Amino acid sequence: MTLFLAAMGTFHAPLHVLGNEQLKQSAYFLTQADVSYTQNTGAKPLNMAANPQRLQLPLPDSWDQSKPDFEGHAWYNIRVNLDPHRPLPNALFIPRLVMNAHVYINGHWVGGEGAMHGELARNWNRPFLFQFSPSLLNAGENLIQVQVAGYNNYRSGLGRMWLAESTLLEPLHKSAYRWQITGSMLATLVAFGSGLLILVFSRAFPAERGLVYLGLAVMVFAIRNTGYFLDWAPLPHALWAQTVHSLHAWFACLYCQFLIRYMRLEWRAMRTALWAYALVVSLLTFGAGSETILQFTFALLLPVLPLVLCLNLMLLVYAWKQEDCEGMLLGFTSLLFVLLSIRDLSIMIGMLPNESVLLSQYTGILLFICGAWIIFGRFRDMMGQLTQSNEFLNSELAQREQQLFRQFNLLRKVEQQRAKDDERRRIMQDIHDGVGSSLVSALNLSEVRTLQPEEMRDVLQDCLDDLRMAIDSLDPQSDDLLALLGNFRWRYERRLKTSGITLHWQVQDIPKLEGYTSRDLFDLLRIVQEVFANALKHAKASTIELKVTWSEERNVVLLSICDNGVGMPKNPLNQGRGLAHMKIRAKAILVDLYWQSGLEGKGVGVYLTIPKVRQREAAPQ
Image 1 (cartoon, helix red, strand yellow):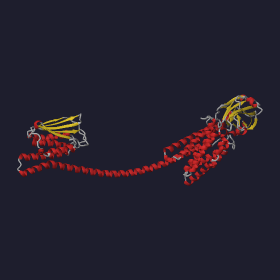
Image 2 (cartoon, one colour):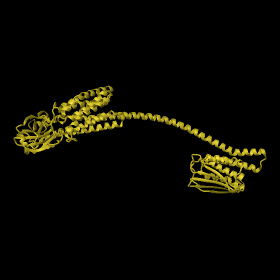
Image 3 (spheres, one colour):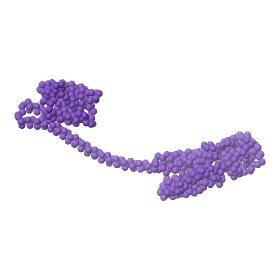
Image 4 (cartoon, helix red, strand yellow):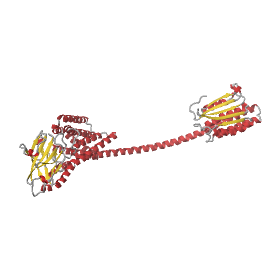
C-alpha cells in the first residue's frame, strides 16, 4: 500500500503545467525562449530582447544547468504569433519560477511579484497568474518577456507557461495554488499542532517520555515546511537556507531516535552516532556557505536515508509480529514520507521535472493522525489501568471500611461497658465514702455506748443526704453549677434551720463552665457538703455565708463558704479526715482550695477558685 501511494504521488501527482484538453485547443503553450543574463537592475525590456548574447533555451530552464554560479537577472524572451482562429488571450499563467519575476508584453509592464534586487522574496513554490489588456497584443508577432531575479545555485529559473483567456487559466491557477500553497500551509499547521500535542502529552506523562523525540521531529518537520508557502524568511536568505537544510539532518536524527526507542532496541552506539551526525551536518552546512548549500546538503543527507528506510522496514516487521496497529500506521506513514522525500529530492536535483508538485510536506497530515492515534491509544491504556486501579482501591477500601466499622462497633461496645463499669464503681465509691462511712462511724459509736435519738437522726440524715447526692449525680443535665448549688440549698436549708443556723446565700450569674463533667461538678458539690457538714457538727456556728461571684479579669468563678463558729482546732491531729478528702477532690478536678480562720481564731473561711475552662494540668494548691 505504501509503495502504491508513493508511486501514485510520483506518476499521478498534479502537473499543472501540462494544462488540459481545452487549453491545448484554445491556448498557447510556451516552451521555448531566448535568454539574456545580466546583473544590471536597470536594463530596458526591449534592449534585452535585442541583446546579441542571448541564448536559445527550452523551458523549463534552471540556472544551475544553463548558467551555473550565476546570480542576478535573466530576461526570457518568448515570441508568439497569434492565431486568428483562437480566442484572444488576456492572461499568462506561470506554474513555477524561482525566485521573483516581472512580466512585459511588447515592452509594456503587466505585473510582477517580489523585489528584483536586495533580499528577494521566496516565491520559488508559488504559481502566478498575470492578467493584462488584450489591446497590448499585436495582430501578428508579439514579444512576451519575463524578467526573473534569483540566487546562484538555488534552482533559480523559469518553467513552461500558458497564454490564454483568463477564464481558462483561473481554474488551473487555483488548483495549483491549492496544491502548492494552501495545502502545504494546512499540512504544516497540522504537523505543528500534532508535534506540540505529542510534546505536551510526553511532558504530562513521564512514562511516555520516549514520545518527546517524535514530537521534536514533527516540530522540526513543520518548521522546515514553512518554506513551501512563506514568501519571507525570519533570517537572511543565506542563513535561513542553511538552517532549513540542516533541519533535514535533525529530523532524521530525532525520528530515528524515536524509532529505536519505540522498538526497544539497545543501539546505544547508533544513537550516539545519530547525534554526532546531526551535529556534524549542521556545522558543515553552516560552514559551506549558501552558494553550494543544495548540492552539499544533498550529499550529506544521502547516507542517512538507507538507515531511515531500514528502521521503517524494521518497524513494520516489529508491528506485524506484535499485532500493533499503532506501529503499522506509524511505519506506513514514515515509509511513505521517506519515499516521497526521495521523490521531492529527485525533483530538486533535476531527475524529475522541476515543475512537479512537491508532496513530502503532505505527510504532516498523516503524522498528525499517527500522533493522535498514539496519544489516544496511550490515554486509553492509561484510563484502563486507572479504572482497574480505582476498582481495586475501591474494593480494598470497602473491605477496610467494613473492618473499621466492625472494630468501631466493638470499641464502642467496650467503651459503653467501660462507662457503665466506671459509673457503677463511682456510685459504689460514693455510697461507700458517704453512707458507708456514716454507718460505720455510727456502728463503732454504738459499740461504745447507746446512741441518743438525736445522734441516730443525724446519722440517718447524713446517709439520706449522701444517697440524694449520689442520685442527683446520675442526672445527665447535672452540668450547671448554680442549679446543683440551688438543689443542694433546698435539701440542706431545713437542717440548718433545725440547728439554728442562718444561711446567707449570695449567688451571682456566672458563665457556663466548660470542660467539666458531671463527675467533676459532683466532686465540687461534695466539697461544699463537707464544709457544711463540718459547720453543723463541729463549728457551733450561728451563721453560714455562701457566696458565688464571677471574676472576668481572671476568667474564674470564686466560691467561698464562711461561718462564725469556733474556728479550726489548733492541733492538726484533731482536724479529722474531712479536710484531706476536700484536698483530694479539689486536686482531682484541678481547682484551687484554701481556708483560713477568722479574727482571734473565730470562724472559718473556705475558698474555691474554679477556672471557667477546665485545666489540663494540676492546679497549684
